[in-house]
Length: 332
Image (cartoon, rainbow, N blue to C red):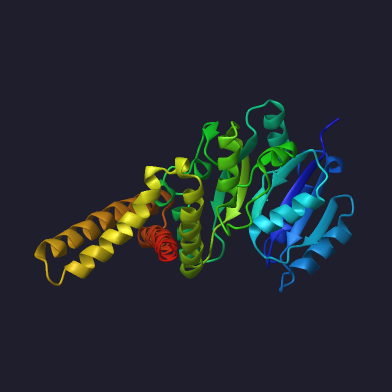
């Protein structure tokens, strides 16, 4: 018999996308009778709960439970959902994603084959809104210049990796390595996977496991998102220094170099030249990427939009990381 799968979903004010996710779960090729959905809602103030209730009434054959997450943070929501889940296998999803119809089937298959202790797949990043900037942000969020070697955004080959978005695992894994860390407001998946790897487990990325992820629609929202990523990444790395990678130093070093050269520029000619050269080279690289994408997709606005999106990600992530470092040093 197919194992029971618990799909756990942290959620807060997701009325725009929650039904897209639920419809996608309804279309899964995995037997519906062997799935249960547990939504941990952070006491949403929009119509999220009404949307879920309406869906539940219309589709009573899909086991669906909503539990409260009063802390309104993702790791706490995941743990609340885990406490109510009964499945042998846990599939962790977000309320702003849409898994492909065979998503759960592939997850269960990879786990059954022993390919990894936590398995996940690739994001197909779609715009989170209308307009050229929303489209540019989605493309920037999937571009190697914007996200480095985060393979879950563009990989085509299955492999062992450091982390996967969301992830599927046997419930017994939580008993082995512990639940999600509620002291981290973001990076909870990476931190969980770090513990899995330190315990001798393997994280497996399979491009056959695919989901649509909706990027932020506005630059301000993108900046807030990546500032949080940078801020909490440092907190996570301090706990697991062996997981530090050279690429994680690039955004904060870039921001520090710009600030340092800008402060010295009024008094030091070499600083002015260095600042001009750094900005020129950086702009040229991003402009070339923007032009290539604009030509390939026949959308001229990407020439400027993609570089703007990547700059926003780099500066926000680096600034959040630096502020987190300064905050930590001030507490010493």
